[in-house]
Image (tube, rainbow, N blue to C red; front, side, top):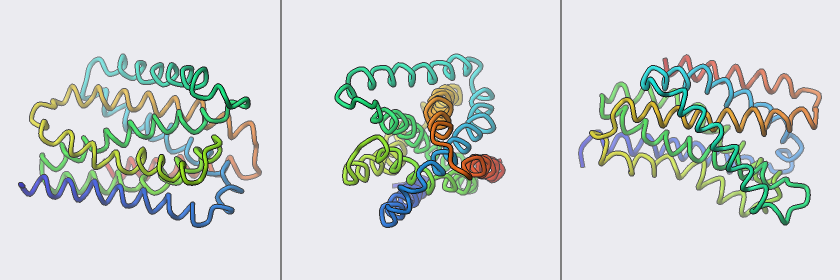
Length: 243
């Protein structure tokens, strides 16, 4: 086992642990979390949309000339997933709320899986590059776990199911992505990673713009705009740390 593999695995496990801590924290204080779900939704919209446009999209465009096509594919792919989930998986739920939990779950899960690829590649370049990438990426892991768990609860899932689904999608997928990608890291070229990042950005933009923001607007809370602006501010910090 080479040093790069050990360090990349450790970094991805740290990211998973931070996400799990977020899930545990919001479950521990679930009554407070339920009362303030819309603030987390507004915050999440600010983070996902801003981080995608300011960081993931430009990076993918720089890595792959056809990234706009993959960006569009990610966006409409999530739209089709949403239509499928609403029409079939959620058909027994008359208010259609389960899609609010499942669609973001898919988008965040895919993005976290690609994060594992990024850890593999960054630490293959150098330990220093990997550390810089880790600092920027770990910043969004804690709220990501909270957001995933609360959206699943709002979608009608039991606390137990929401706990396990959010853990698998938001936390476990990162080290899994690292383990899957590392043996093939020499074959994953810059262009292919750019395509994956573009698909990921399209999925996250869809989740933020068509699921989270409309929910925040529908249940307008007194300070939801401030929560949205706080999400944008956190995204700026993430981008600045990863620059």
